[in-house]
Length: 217
Image (cartoon, rainbow, N blue to C red; front, side, top):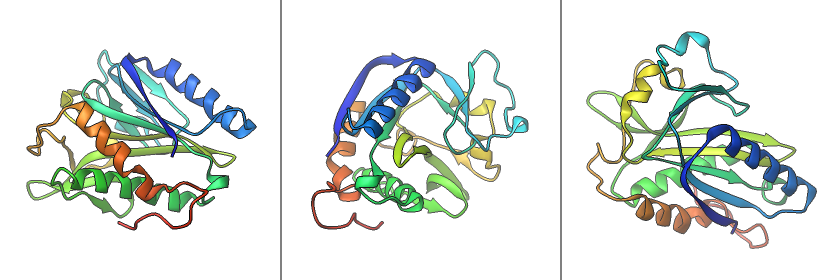
């Protein structure tokens, strides 16, 4: 199992991405081990490789960053748990779709531990829940894989201020909303969420030296 590191405070976006890129390069070079970083960012809007300028609606004073991960626009900020996952898929399973499927299964497993029925949605990455006559997004996925080493990862809305999502069309989806665990009635803190993320990780990303495959969700 990779080491889990919790970064203190609010992590600056650019510096954290630079550090993550350096760690991923070190994994490829064989000089660093796999890690998962748990953190919260300052309020920031990030656009992935598929981001459309028309979906950046009204950023106001929120910093905007274009980044090399997959996906479209999303917001990061306090109250949202980001998990940056740096794994060597060449030692695990060098399959991009299987990796994203495992990330989805991991999130669904975590949400299930708090009584939330998370769902995949065809053609729209991330995890969704049934809202008021629609599907609302509770967790986002955006990954980059460089020579089979993964970086970037997932973001789960625990209890963020939701205003930042109003600055964008989140992930390009116009027929769904955005929600959080708190809005879904789950009253937990970040420590409890982190513990569940750690506890469920190996069910979906088993140690490469052990037999078996991840649970299918």
